[in-house]
Length: 455
Image 1 (cartoon, rainbow, N blue to C red):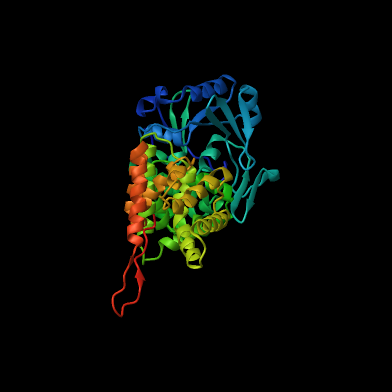
Image 2 (cartoon, rainbow, N blue to C red):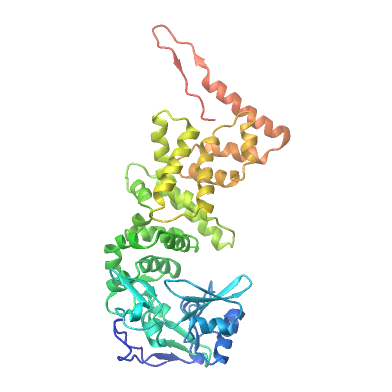
């Protein structure tokens, strides 16, 4: 299969050529039968139009590992405008990185033009670098330059539609075999400073693939987490979804905390988790992420609003308790706590309103779920967020933070119907009255009242 390629620092220019390793079709396991028909259509049409066309990145990596890729990306020497000429169903997007999206119904094949040039070269403003971070990169180049500007060696593999070979410029084949995640080049810190999101990608790929992170990359991961504060909060929202909605969210969470990165995404939550006097916050988050992983692995839907409700609950709960101690009514206290924590989180990771509103509804329903008398329970059952709030209550009960009897009551109430449901409500009312009945004080004894049940 040939000798592995040399791996120069990405700041080297094309004047220092790298001889790639070319793996012929008979020596790798990628079959066109496992590639999306729409991705193949894009590859073939670009080739027929006279352009180079390669399947690249995670799609090639996953196919070589025997996994089913989530999506397929294409790299080409055609400029974005040229791609749009070839495909009428194409839209150009992005300012930071100009990309072509070719639409086939719900499937989108992303087509990127080869990036190139020296990492310090801004060539008439096509590349902009601020404090070491690339904020715009539309400087185009060769396939070799494109490969060496990518992040990890295992993501710099090219499947050539012309002869079905795999082209490796950075030793990605060896790293795949070794289960190793390694940044391209000889200066990992510089690569992470160019794009701090690569730290999150390192964690995500390590969790997803079960790979170890190269030691040369681990040191900077532990030291450079603060750079995430310079990344647009809206971009971090997308990265958080990739981290926690990929089927390995619990492992990603553990790795984020290990490398000190979670604190830069959810600082209020990390402050709560770092306290050693309470154990259920970590248990709550872990159980919630474990459930999310199971749903993803079973191809069941998952909701971003529920994920963020889960990750931010502990600071909301603690602020709620403070407001209760200040004599605010439970519903008002929860609404205030929800608004404060939601607002403070926006500067780290933006949560779009279409998700932040239902997230807050899940929180605000928690004290209302304690009201089980009369018509309150029946009204709550018709609330559009009831099911999510009930699932949230179950997680709280399982982690030891909420009363298991309350969660069990709501389970029985939902399963009952007609008169049975009325009897469930009546039973809760009688228990409340019984627990709240005053005991006659004995001689010389202060008059006392037993605490009423929260329901």
